[in-house]
Image 1 (cartoon, chains in turn cyan, purple):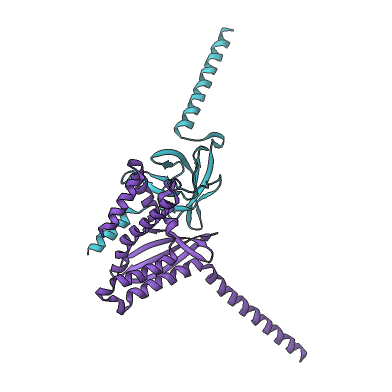
Image 2 (tube, chains in turn cyan, green):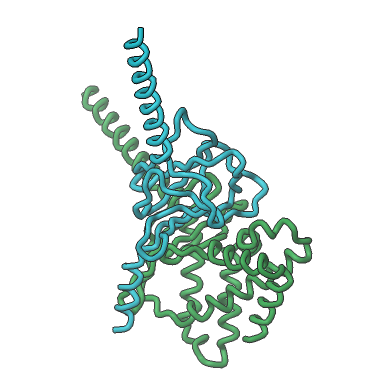
Length: 146
Length: 207
């Protein structure tokens, strides 16, 4: 009887440990279980410039969502973004790919528009701006001087 | 004899079919290129004005500018551009304010871009294709300057009636509307809409 109790306690302890581990990996990995809350919209960029799955979606510096997937479509990048329901995006909003600092990670910034119509789930942000290639711009600047 | 007539007829039919499919095949891309064609017409008109030797003399500068503006006016939707640049703050404006703002915004763009258009030695312009999505289109253009540089431009246009009107353009990945939207938003949030108007007005009197 006593032996059974110890085994039960160890079993419960291990189970609790596994649950904690699961919770941690979901939280740290920023995964979403069963779809998560919110809705999805997409945008087409001519150059995704290294945005990855899980990259941040930012409005006015506030993280509001994440990149859900990036696929190549017609030689352009189709980026799906998941956003919470309370964040509505206007039809003329502009999505642009930015870099944190000079060499930091990439994120997508949405500048809200003024249209009365909002983009419905599954809809598309029409106005996009690709990531600006600093190297290219600098090289252009350098060569103009010559 | 009758057999050869039949085969002859067949050949004629096949040739006619081929010819038709060829011509229709030719027609459809030109049809799809409506926004690009219209943009090209406007650009060609501007270039013609710029290269007109009669208008090149110093005392004709103003006249030339007016001619260019008239051509550009037909292709650009200033109100849409102003609306998009002011974004959330546009809705709160009265019709008079909207009109005033559109006017000032147009003046601002004229000032900023006229010098560039007049001063640039455009060697060649190549049209790099377009994307049409319903009433919206994006036209990609490459400009080769005399210094052998290339500048990538992208026009965004919207169909109104039979015309494709430009409401945004992107130079080397930096968008005009997005740029002004951020700036105007900052000024309005920091001070007020009146301050923005004041700034735009002082800028226009500087010239």
